[in-house]
Amino acid sequence: MTSHIFSAYDEDLKYLNRRISEMGGLAEQMCGDAVRALVNSDAALAQKVISDDVILDHAEREIQEKAIVTIARRQPMASDLREIIGTLRIAGDLERVGDLGKNTAKRVIAVQGTGVPRKLARGIEHLSELALIQLKEVLDVFANRSVAKAEAIRQRDEEIDAMYTSLFRELLTYMMEDPRNITTCTHLLFCAKNIERIGDHATNIAETIYYIATGAQPEGERPKDDSSNTLGAVAE
Amino acid sequence: MNSISTMITTTTSTTKAATMSESKISARNVQVFYGEKHALRDVNIEIRPRSVTAFIGPSGCGKSTFLRCLNRMNDTIASCRVEGSIGIDGENIYDPKVDPVQLRAKVGMVFQKPNPFPKSIYENVAYGPRIHGLARKKSDLDDIVASALQKAGLWNEVKDRLQESGTGLSGGQQQRLCIARAVAVSPEIILMDEPCSALDPIATAKVEELIHELRSNYTIVIVTHSMQQAARVSQRTAMFHLGLLVEENDTDKMFTNPDDQRTQDYIMGRFG
Image 1 (cartoon, chains in turn orange, green):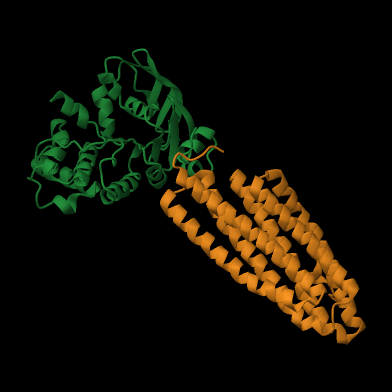
Image 2: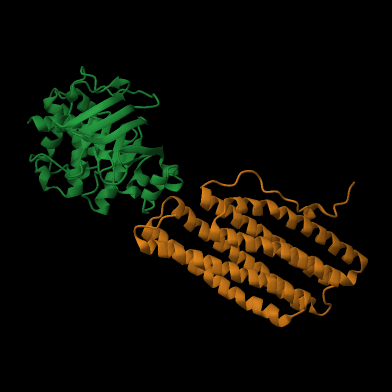
């Protein structure tokens, strides 16, 4: 896209873009660290994730302030306006992603005593790989504004949902096998849910990028394969 | 005298056509030449009744030229030639049978710079209705003047000093006086050529509020350099560029997701 006649306006937009990329990088790192801390029972790493969340919250507030000032000073129109509004939404999503990483990290202490069974740890790791790939790719799409890729990411959330449902089922089985697993498995259930929701936020971001680029909302319902909310229902 | 009557424009016929057809003004293949210069190329547009349509575009794009075509103000420029047709309520205003003075009764105009007559506030508004016989007695004329000043949102500020000179008012008040003068002869269409460019933000807001109120009774076409103003007051926006009408769209769409790249570049303040 061509530059603005008033170049300071371009600087404002570049600043917002750069801060979103930084937030995205940090959120991604926090979530990866949180899962590593969980499977390795690494309390120090978990603590680092918890303290990193402060940086992410601060970044979100700075982006909000800059966006508001930019709207007031530049009175943005068309795709500039969509971009600034989109930036606000994406910053909100990334801040939530950080919260989910932090919540996972907090549970590390609780499961530290028993440790995480190897099989479950692999399940959680696999789920988080899928979610973090989504997050990484959506941040790449934000940088290059590829509408086709944004749409593809949105479609792929289904995989994460399916994986989450299968992990949910596995955790239930463990709990039924031995009630002593309940504490750990309940925490892991929340961790799995956290990771699944990171995927949802990545999908939200993909939809926002689609809106920024086209001015339209993506068509059709996003595919959902999370059937955990009906799992365990007793058939009459 | 002649120029003054052209400016305020009226006839005895003041029946307001309550046409509910889709378009009040319909321009087909309009071309305008100033001597050799081709100022407007093939403009086609339908302007809806009882709504505000804004014309935007960079200087020299033809938006004011087109506005002036809508009440044949360009007739006064010797070198100007208009081709194509412009229909108002289905009647081609460039038909030789059409009397421009009658036309301008129907299509009032407000200019960039407030231009009150060097007469009293009362006379500024009463002049048009009086010379066109809209009032049979003094009390009728008083009513017309009061009503026009009320419609222009000026009544409360001037009701106690109607005999003072119109030129003694502030710039914003003068512009509203000019709007009252246009409204006094009961036009159906009001053309505004950058009506706020000489006003401060408060006076601008008052005129914009007035445009918003007048919309329920008049078809308003406004040329503005301020995109924010177009976004604030209009329902439809038309973008002109290099003599072409490049896009005409709902204002909501125009300023969030325009269809044409040239509109996008212009409203976003980017190099084309």
